[in-house]
Image 1 (tube, one colour):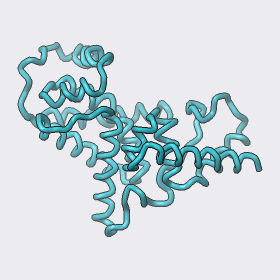
Image 2 (tube, rainbow, N blue to C red):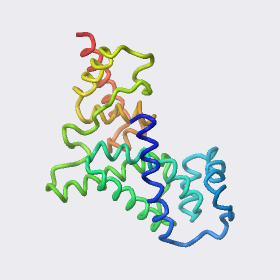
Image 3 (cartoon, rainbow, N blue to C red):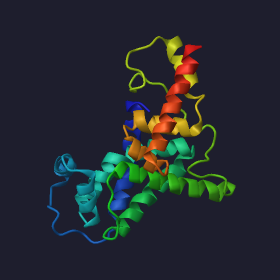
Image 4 (cartoon, rainbow, N blue to C red):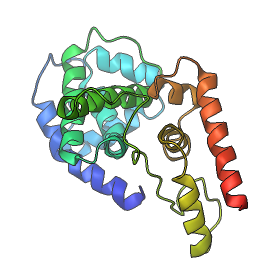
Length: 230
């Protein structure tokens, strides 16, 4: 989940984006025409100060630059998240591509979204669970996944480790993290690796209340403390 993995994911999806852009719903004639070499930089500059609600509304109104921005910002993290649910990278890639294609076709009738990342993660999780259930029968849900889902790789880049640790301590933390339940590992990853709020975590994990997300995190951290004390 380090910089190399994120870069790999980003490169992997450049070709996918070209396929998506060729699908056409209606083009927004108000979108400024920008020479190709500068288009991506201009897109990032245009939307970087806007809220998720503003970006989503622009996309829903047919703004191609908003679609470009959403894809470029979230595709890599979606791939990383999806790979924690299914080890079948082809399935993950297909579900992400289909997710963006579906959103693009439905624009103009999409509901308002406050956190684009949480919304996309929730949609991808549902799609992957649907595909997994097609293959193995209806045994997976947002609450029930494979026991090895959301394995946490301890990295010096993550916020879970504030200072460099010796190899032995790192290994101990690694073992402790992966003794957590699947749901606890998922919540910890969303909080520390993806930087989500408790409200966003509750949305992704399809919890009815934000306090349920807090409870899962608190229990996970308490379990970690107990394991590391031994």
